[in-house]
Image (cartoon, rainbow, N blue to C red; front, side, top):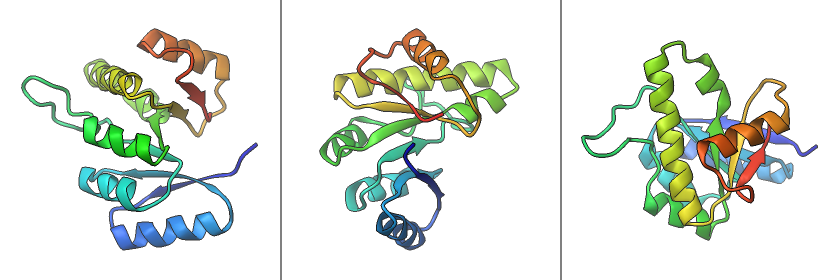
Length: 152
């Protein structure tokens, strides 16, 4: 089992220091932030394994969902071989059905974009969840079989 560290930071310099410290220990890095600009900066300048996008509490645009992921992010992730993470705990913790359906719609939008750019996606969860169930969920959401990875 590979070692992972989740870095959730809102300051670039602090995030950079934590990422470099984790890389010294040869630990795989999962980076998460609520700031889209910081996510882009990290994708451009640092070496992370997974970019975990926060999909809850976002306001959608008129004609498109605001998932915090777009074609610019996709090209940067492809160039730096970064996987896109789906926060399963965030989906399970949401009580409102309306909000849960909005999160799943954002996930589906990200899946389409990742499929178009041949990016890998991973489910990230703190709980002990069967990897076959995660594969089933991924297939239900529209993931091709090559794209599905699970870090439960």
